[in-house]
Length: 493
Image (tube, rainbow, N blue to C red; front, side, top):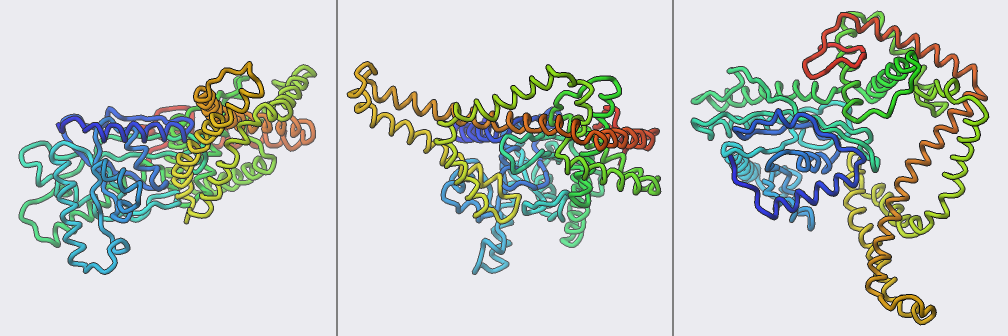
């Protein structure tokens, strides 16, 4: 096993963990027990969210990680220093090596490959994204052979020791660009590789290349199942709608309202629908297509009303004058009384929020970059804003003390308290936004039940019918080992 990581590495990992915990609402981790303790290995994941993807792996992995990153990133003024402190090995691409010959670039990449392979053979783990570039697709993009070649090289350097493992990692975002969204990082069991995918001493370069290509296909097959890939975002959205529909209808039939589920439960429910769809589109295509069309209409109606599946059941449980009065008081408190109390939070943090959004629009070349830009800009500007409030308070405090002698003559303490209050006000504003959204949804649900009673009743009937059709299609399907029964249609894909 490798030695304990140096202090600088551990300090940077601590910083990354702090940043990740602040940006995301819930960071759930599953499957750490699948990571081998007796050998090193290669972590492979898809790449949907820019620099956030490696940050999440770094923050949640139970050990030291060596990253391979394109050389261009290591040249960034601040990020480059962080990457180098983490021991990141540069990967040279044509876009980052203008003026360099192909032969020179291949020689540099061979040196990088050897450096990473030596780390794996010594018991460390490396994290790679075999797609090569981050993207906004709901499925795995075409994989490069670099991960497979790295694995074969590390296996050759391991000598008589245990062969490195290949561990697929699933990154599941609720909304990858949204502040305080949830994310699940799932470490899956190492790939069980057949002998024909392992390194064979003495083979020719062409044979080695072909073997790396077939190993890459095996890694791609694993990642497709790990990330629950779909052909397009519409199908991805419909699968989530099926998950919430099934859960809401099952709760309604027992007279209950489903509690807020965790990101792990949401990912599991999606996995069940995904597996079931993959099986039944081959065996029951004549039923799948009409079901998909009806689910699409149901989904669009809910979206038009800005309601969720469980909102259809609000009226029977929340009828009466007292319930209406309670909701009215809640809305008054949230939309009338609280905003003035949070004025300081808006004044201090509002401009930074606007600048952060503007920076995300200006510097994000694609949706995959939004979260990265927000984190980089926010974690630079927010502390500066809080510090600015503290400094301004400390400088102005002597004047305030002269006007109001009863105030203590402690400008530094006053500045520190002001900075802390500026930070706390930002936290309160963020939580208020979530509360306001939930209250607005409750008001919309109440109005829909009163003004569109027939539409809501029709949607409840449609939901019940869709639920029964999903359950009927799910009968007789066997779940994969990593998908347990939550009462949702599923199957082994």
